[in-house]
Length: 290
Image (cartoon, rainbow, N blue to C red; front, side, top):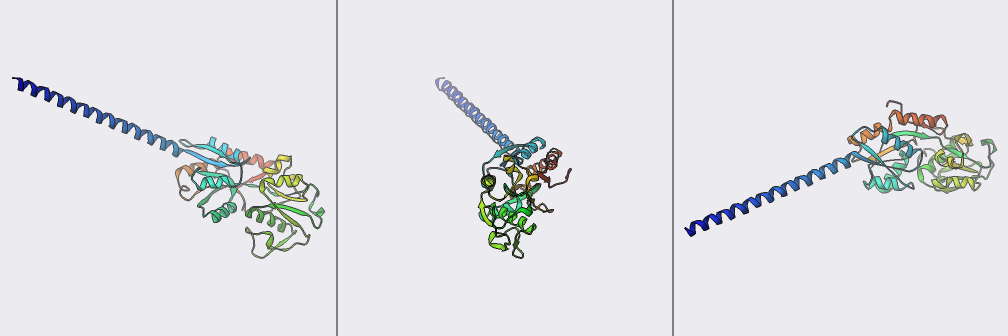
């Protein structure tokens, strides 16, 4: 009788232990499933939240408008940077999904220097650039020996020199275009002296009295000037230097980047750019409804 009772007790303990183990396994399984679902939700949220690096107005304005126009489930977070290096480094290092701060020749220069994989997705607008002067009112007033401030980065240096050639102020070597430097100047009839200045500091050169200063409307606007105040402007119907939405080779064909492209070419963005076009600052580089 004692043995039979002992057997029942042992069987009860075994059943209890097995039940506890099953409960623990079930709880562990539920916790694992909850954690897995949480990770999936986080990944899904990360995939639909697009980070776009940008630098200054009106580029940042366009990013904000695209954020309002993008279709669900996507959202846009703007990452504002302070210089012309961070936005490409952040994109290359996959810290952001895209950027909007440069033209394609500048992007190509970055790729060449950093063995990058950045890709131009969509030209958005072409800034109306040109030369400003605190001394001269017209191109006919320009004197020999004038100092000319041009950007220190390669692609904008080439752009600045090409504008001078367009207006017959210098002659570049045959075949030299988007990689032109001052060393490629074949004829300099006005005996200009060229000073390389960081793009963000060109406005200061104007304020310092440099006779001719290349500049963008975005930067020269800080001292109350517009392209209407320029001595002469760029002549380019091909939008070669249009400010462009840029992504990477690995994400350029994703649904997220396609949604971003549609937002950047939305009616809201086009109408905003058209307003700036009326003020003479820029020209849209895409057709409405594109």
